[in-house]
Length: 597
Image (cartoon, rainbow, N blue to C red):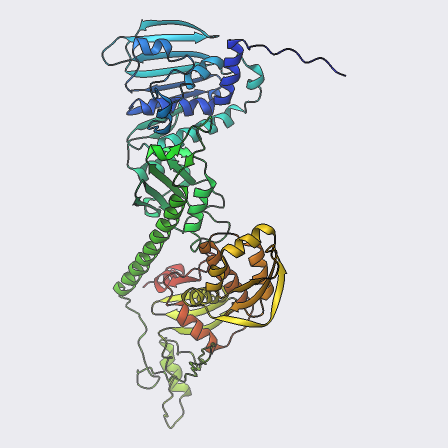
């Protein structure tokens, strides 16, 4: 029935060390991570990284930090040697990037390692480690700081070496790690060399400047990157946020740092997404670099070999603060953009700005014939005419076609609205002229936003003549029971039908939700978020279902009233983040056809 199990025995220390090394060092990128942590902790002002063949052949990291004494360099490559912690309690107040004392010992177990270091005014010492045996330390040439050289990575673990990727892929991974480590330390100069060529130079800079330098291919402009700071008791936030006008289709550039250490935390990435919800459509993600500075006693980095995962004792508060900080920033920034745009428009002085005129006496006039009904949801205005064009040939045409009795022909005045509606385009856009701009308004997104705003300001609950019964899962049932008051505040009245909370009746719906009862039930069956998330998602769902659709033909009266409400919006984006309109200024149109202003 198979071979008899072998007896348990103690592993050879040399073999055990190589197994342990694989938990920390799995590719060249991991070596860059560990060595940069040590160089930064050493107080370096310049750090250089050299790679050959993606780090497979050679890695060298040179810094000008505090360096190591002869005693330090004699033991630094041994297991669990560190200057960062002394007692178990120190693990709960980590203030450095490196602390486990495993980096150099793990590197020494899987490569040919040499360390050169100078401490203050002491001589420079060198130690070389091969197959677990050290040569030195011995005095060598003078050098400031520390130089770490790694050659023939995984020469002693061929099974691991064959899983490495191509030199180009390993170089890219190392460079990515290099950038991550450098972003939160703009006061340090970094240089990255590959196969003898300078690949990336990051001079000392401010925070936004460092990001721009680190990602030259993105062609960032400081105009589109904004620094936002917020302090909340035990922690503080610093966010470098992009303007909603630039975004990606993935989350690559939503990066979270805790005490200057890059971490993977989906909930905090999600917080950034929530902050941009009303400004970016689904599937679009911002550029956002979040730096969280928190009391070290409130965070535990000692749960992952690469220290990429953490436990935060203020996780919910931090999540909430990120969302609110981004929302406030985007709202204020949007208001500033509008104010700046209005100021620019007021400053324009067009020499050929149309003046009001009449065909017979150079006085243009319009007559108003509103059909406005305050009691109706569908406010409207019937457009009666279009203003006459202002061309020189119109005077000649007038002389030919004007009747002999010279009766004055009047063009109706514009409406009392401060805009002029020209009609629908493609069954999707409303064409609007306002002051010196042309607006193409997405009728569905516009109506959706108007409904969303009205629901957010006040919800009317409408009882159903016949309650609708539906089933939910056990988890959703408990969630409904816990948040019954929240649902009722949103105009949704629910009552349990069974004691196990898996059967419910829908008793009342919010206004605008008539005829979409099944959509509301589906929403309730699937949504289990916080009250804030429920509110936003519910109103977005109702607004989308109740709004005018693409292809719907609307009368002028309805269009005019919808436009008047839309143009008053402080945030012209639909609940899903899409822009409600596209504004084209008169100046932009003239430039597009190369017409002089």
